[in-house]
Length: 218
Ligand code: E4P
Image (tube, rainbow, N blue to C red; front, top):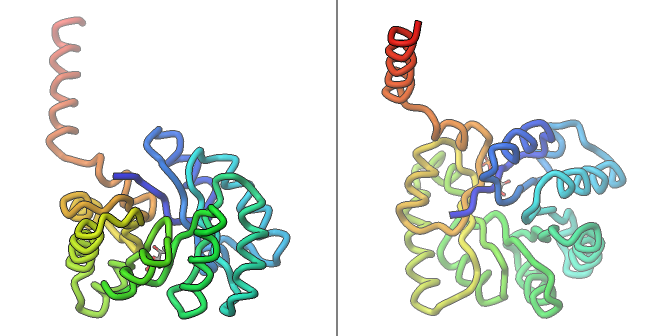
């Protein structure tokens, strides 16, 4: 399973990259705003900065919601760096845009997916990635992991190439469950990645090993 980090914070992206297990980055307009990145030029520069840190796919979201606008913005974004993946919302013109970019060999990530039917449409349109938002489903009492399972089954039935990018991951158990049910990628905050490291028995065990070594070598 690929690990993407879901942030526009350059320090956190660097920290995850330095671990050596980072495969890519996802961003969205809210994450950009959270870092205080506003204005087209600054946003574009920020995408380039992210691409210069990570050797992997970086999702950059279009703001337009009409086909012509999405194509214009998506083409501009795709020219920034070879790692850019154009992030397109799951709306009617978005499906057309996914098909357009797929025909041109430009990578896409279909975002704001909340149902199996939407995921089926994204795959039919040739999306590179589909992003079901599991945390936001859990927030409203739908089972996000169950949706990943459903999409996995459908994609496997028809051998769709679209990769399931489990998005809106909030914590380590989401990561583990996504791995169990066969998500191709997960994207979450840095805490959901580094949290996987933690186990009290590891810490206790290491402390004991070091203490015993110190006793025998003092
Ligand atoms: C996906 O690409 C989105 O950026 C993201 O995962 C949304 O997560 P949230 O529900 O925690 O905002």
